[in-house]
Structures are given as C-alpha cells and as structure tokens.
Amino acid sequence: EMGDGVQEVLATAGNNRLGGDDFDKRIMDYIVSTFKAEQGIDLSGDKMAMQRIKEAAEKAKIDLSGMTTADINLPFITADQTGPKHFETTLTRAKFNELTADLVDATMGPVRQALSDSGLDKSEIHKVLMVGGSSRIPAVQEAIKNFMGKGPFKGINPDECVAIGAALQAGVLGGDVKGLLLLDVTPLSLGIETMGGVSTKVIDRNTTIPAKKSQIFSTAADGQTSVEVHVLQGEREFAKDNKTLGVFHLDGIAPAPRGIPQIEVTFDIDANGIVHVSAKDLGTGKENNITITSNTNMSKEDIDKAVKEAEQYAAE
Image (tube, rainbow, N blue to C red; front, side, top):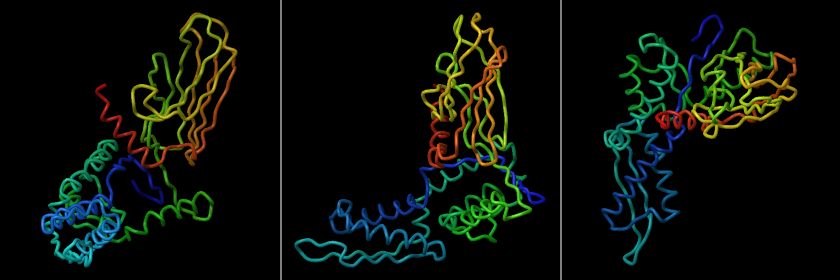
C-alpha cells in the first residue's frame, strides 16, 4: 500500500521452487525427447550437449517473449558411428505455452496467498508490478491479467527494479534518501517453545515492523527457579519443525508451584529486522535477553520453503 511517500508491505508470499530455470528445463526436455525420437540417441547424459541445449532453451524462451516462433539450431550436437548429428526445429509460442502451462498455473498460488493474507480483494488492487526476467513471458502476464482483471504495469524494467529498490532502501537507512518510508513485515512468525515441544507464536508473520509484543508465560514444574527460552521462527506447530534463532536462560525465579510465576517474554523487532527477545520474572524483576541480528535470519528461499511446509503439514 503506497501513499505520501510511505510504502507499507501488507503481506508476502512466494514459491522458491519456481523460476525461470523451470521454464528453460521444459524446453530442454522437449529438445532431448524430440532428438531421441528422431535419432534414437538420448542426450541427457551428455554434459557438453546438455550445456548447449540449456543455452539454446534459454534463448528460445527469451525470443518467444517477443515473437511467436523461435528457431533452435544445434549443429554437431553429438555423433555416432554414422557421423555427426544435428538438431534443428522451430518452437512456437503455442507449444511453449503447452509445455509450461502447469508452471504458469503455479505462479498464481502465491498471488492468491498474498491477497488472502493482506485481507484485500483483487478488485482493490490498483496496480500490478511484475519483476524478474520471466515476468516477460506472455502466458504469465496473461494469467495475471485474467486473474487480477488488469494487466501488469509497464513503466518499470523488471530486470533492474529489485536492485534499484534495494539501493533506494539503503539510501533511506543511511539517511541519504529523504521522503520515503518502507514499512516491511515479518516473513515468518516468531515465538518460543512451550511445554510439550509446542511452538507458541508471539509475533505472527506479516506483522508490520518495527513491532513489539509481549506475552505472559509461567513455569512447568513446582519449585522451578530457571527457565530456558528457546526462540523460534516458522509456522509449524512443533518447535522441532521450526528454525532455532537462539536460546537463553532466565535464572533466579522465586520457587513456587507451577503456573504461579509470571514470566513476561517480549519480542522487539526494529526497522532493520534485528530481533531483541527478553524474558522478565515479574515477581523478582530478574531479566535476561538475546539479540538476533539479520545475518542469522532465513534466506528468501528458506522462508518460502518454511511457509509451504507449514501448509503441507498443517493437518498433522
């Protein structure tokens, strides 16, 4: 959501298992299968041939973004006892769309997820920005247009805008760029391990940062004078299935029956994504904390994988 120099991220979603290489792979498989049908030779085990096929497939994909046909010419791709073998074919955009239809369908999953998480209806979206080279694929653009009811905005370079955005954000954080504010969100939930190995969320994913939230916990055993705070990141129900960000201990709790001590756990995330976690015994005032810097956070690929796995195993 944008307005008056403020860009607020309402939700994030993605699929790290899907990208331009997957579209290339479909063309590669098509070339290999076609050549095998014509010549009776399987090129899939020939590393040099496969490298040439990969380069030809990527070029064909790019060509088909601007043309309806792409010529694929691979002279001397291999040889047998009868002599050298060549491969030549014309790949149509229609055939490419047929080969990659399921990949295009898969791109819509994260779109639906992000809309759902944001609480917005697609009719409330005013502009669709598509980034990355594969966003130029006509079938991808058409799928977005059919789903959203509007085509992608053409006023950006999809190959450059991510880098430009990162540079602008660096300028904002460094104080060199004025008048812009990015309100980002936490990509995954943050919480702690509680009794039974359960992961209890304190800050839900897609919470706008900076953010600060507290929750009261207690002891699990009578006379317990120390607790271990196991800080977690992820969407799974059990701690063992999520990522450990850090562990610290709070000692000096006054002995009491279980459930009586009040221990306040606070998560404080700053604008740089640095997480400060503290635990305080409200009875004694004893406190301990841990700071988790951004370099211990999960990569984009890990984030997408964690969300997908959480959805897959939600029924467990």
